[in-house]
Length: 189
Image (cartoon, rainbow, N blue to C red):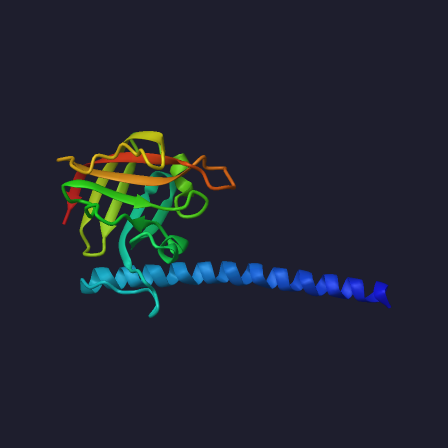
């Protein structure tokens, strides 16, 4: 009797695990569709639109690196919920296109996985939720300790920083961050 139950139990466990994996991927796909919709509605209306009623965040920008086909919707803040669904805009940093440094952060294994493929000189397009478009050029990168980013919040230039954990292939938390710096080269309002 025990031998006949074991394959059935194993098959049931396998089915539950498979279903859980499908559910997670379906939820992630649906979230991206809802984020895109909320961002498009924000651009059209000029108002912050939450992607779902209970969200604690809303889309504030879209980042694109066309050379490598990368695109991500940036959410306001860096709460756990926000970073689960996309890059977050670091509080107390300016919005893209403003004087100072706009800083966006995301997980290295999801939404900022593409940063490993960004080369110096690549163009990074940022469209804000108010419809304003800014073009930046990647000009430097660094690996720094999480508490020593080297980001100067008093800069008088128009800068963008995309930050994620380092190294890209690590499976555990890491004390280092990869910081990609870019400078504004063009504005379309």
